[in-house]
Length: 173
Image (tube, rainbow, N blue to C red; front, side, top):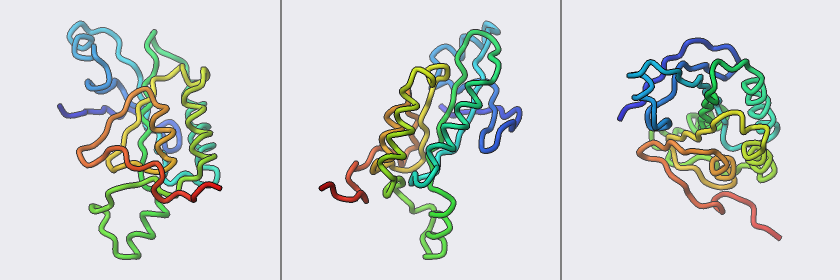
């Protein structure tokens, strides 16, 4: 089934506010629509891969802002973490002549500490106020798998999946 989003406002940087959630993510969405029950608020947070520098802290800050939003109703807001190739890596690949349609995996080169920091936050009691969904259109590999696996649910495109944890990572001592 197709996934439909009704974007109602962009209230936060890099966060698109959504009205309703997708049917694959909520078992009772169709029943709620038919019965005119409340639907959860949803957000999309872009997660650049590989995670380097302060990327994890930027994502965590966005999630904290979402958690501080007043709730309408009893349902937890849904946060879709869109794991995607960083703009810098996309630009580098374009300059190297890499066809963006052919990029098959992302996340290689993610800093372990950055990935662990984000994964710990996603699995923390603080983040329990939202339902986390990992979304990726490409194969995720390396340490970037940690925050993906820390999400409550996964929504993967037809050419995506989980790659090797060791791919593109420095060897351990």
